[in-house]
Image (cartoon, rainbow, N blue to C red; front, side, top):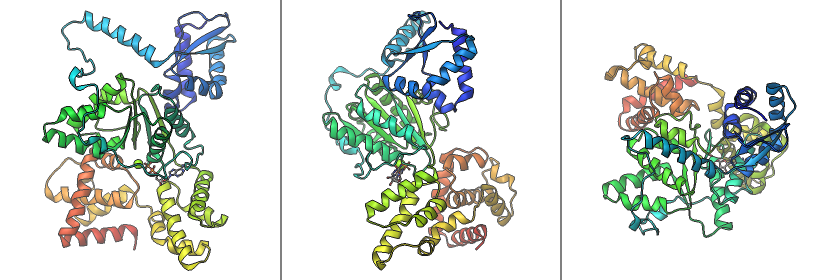
Length: 470
Ligand code: ADP
Ligand code: MG
């Protein structure tokens, strides 16, 4: 047996051994069983799902036993007991109920009750077609698995196969073009093929926002709610765009809670972990991290090569190894760009009926590589823009709103988005901790101004050329 002190020591030790994400995914949900184990030198650990148990046995059992030995100074073996999250949650809810019962007047934060007459069937609101079409190429079969994404891939497969909402929500995050949408569609395809009776709704968060705003306008929130709550699996892509939108966030939160309470599977993607998403309420953030959050990392050289070979095959393109190496070396952080480059080469090879060489690739992809060649930093941009408009670099970070500094600041943000691979939140942070929505707004404003105002266009062009050293 292990006592609770030893257990928390073990957890503390594990924390130092694995990344935060791994710890949160695999170890934080573990609980020490209260019942004594059958053998004295054994201890029983509760795991929420079978998949987790298998995974832990396969990958972490040695680590856990090593830790236990260290902490307890006696040899112990561990057995894992699957105790579903539902049971654990039922216990939690029961506990909470008794707690709220004693601390009376405070309103109970119960999941929203659905009026009986509207609950049962999906009303015909037209929103059922709100889902975005699934891309037929985005299947599990077409997904190349490597170290960077095998966790996410396996978890996604598990989610697709199971109908007991074992990880709820499933939260998939990572940088642009790394295959989040691909995996999400793959889950949807799998369910469509294997469980045709299950209702899957895939929607981008922009569309979710759009339908929400429209429902508000039409005073038709009831059917909006019903539509989203009538599905078995709800997938919302890029939820970072819901951040900062308070009313939508609120509605999303309720929909989300309702679905989770009904044990419907919710699947979300974002560019950041729930923990790092900015502009969302704490209670939503903590619930987002409640299920399984998995990161897709930048693919290794090896995986990039495998992706290239697979895509080349699909395009009917003969890709020499040296050319593949060259591409995988030049384009490292975005599979979408890698794919785009390959498409371009394939189109050209097809046209000239000659195989691609490193020289022709270099030539055809010159513009793409240029972006990679000159690494422009956010500091470079802020400095150059401040100099250009004769303001202080500090004004880039300050909260001042006068036109004299606000416009250059917006231009600097626009340049940051255009010339670097930084995300909106990252840019916001380096401009005095501004919200990502401010950066998005700046980018939109300058986009428009460069069309409407020739003098701004000229400034922006000039700055861009200076920064890129052309
Ligand atoms: P994200 O949603 O993360 O921005 P996507 O899912 O849209 O990225 O992926 C971008 C492109 O890269 C898609 O065409 C997708 O098929 C491809 N892709 C990304 N990762 C992989 C992978 N591991 N194997 C095959 N194709 C991939
Ligand atoms: Mg995507």
